[in-house]
Image: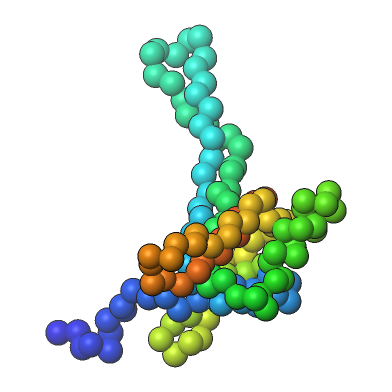
Length: 145
């Protein structure tokens, strides 16, 4: 009978670090770590009614980062401003999922990212919630190391 030390528990999703070329920040949520390929359907004239499905262009989703809004966390807002001024600065970075000992367990690396959207906090005097800002990064490629 296998012991509990042989068991591999899934990693928890709340323990991660985002690092973008020197801008290291804590975020409450990261999403969009995905890739997909277009499907090209192809059929030769001498084949029956079956279509072949070939891989086409690879596409990567926008990475969405959310964090508590602070007055001193202007780094990402300043990065977004470069795009608005027509001086887009493309940066690469990593998103590291940590294990329970806070050691790197998995690392996603993204390339040529730039902030295509920034969303400020929703303000409502009736709520008792943290003000959250969101930054959406357009990336050209994502790799799981």
